[in-house]
Length: 288
Image 1 (cartoon, rainbow, N blue to C red):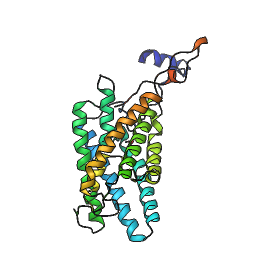
Image 2: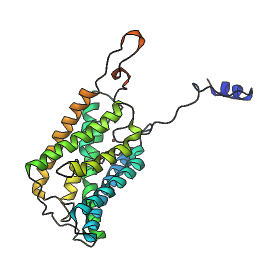
Image 3: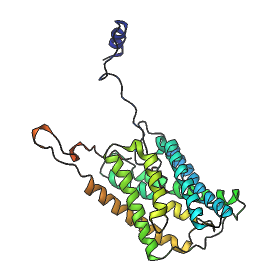
Image 4: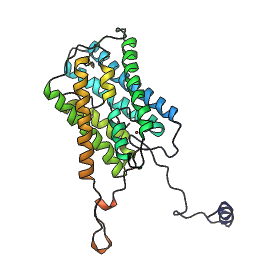
């Protein structure tokens, strides 16, 4: 229907049918491309600011928790609760701009899925996103230390090199990637702010490593010798396990959400109704 026809149609006292009415705008989230892609500089700024804010929440709430109680369980509860709310807000706010990756593992996983011309970040975008995320994570740790009167840069002495902690990072990152890209495969990215934040909050408790699941955040947390810190000597191992976890997560997505074949009688299998992956950035997703 042209604009002229629409005017005549309305003037006749009739309204457009539901089929003709425009549908709701898609709501990008971690792993999703905004309908109208903002300039790359705006997306990079969103990734930098979002990752900085995320690390500020993680580190700042950790410092606050240790000042309020000596109970380690309560400290972790406070830290995880603040992270859940902070991450959900950041994904909701910045998802429409950059996709709210805040996580090189998510960015690289998205680039991998889009490397054959599909929707998603290309090599140029990934090359901008990842440094922005790392810079933001470092800035966020420094900002949190500054707010609580801690040394601006103090290398963490919290060793996290034990094998069971490394396994925890594989599990945490694989689950995060499975969640984000699984939501995309099933066209449910509108739930990403709640789903990703909830997953990270749960993974704080069910993984031995407290679920860093994010190479940029891991680097940033090495700059603070506080509750949420990680010793520089443990960073490389964590990042390696996070990248392995991302590969495992993508493998699980391909296995679990593989397209199905149409069934007889005009019906389709559940897999046949799954949309193609509209991947382009927080949950992470988010992630942390």
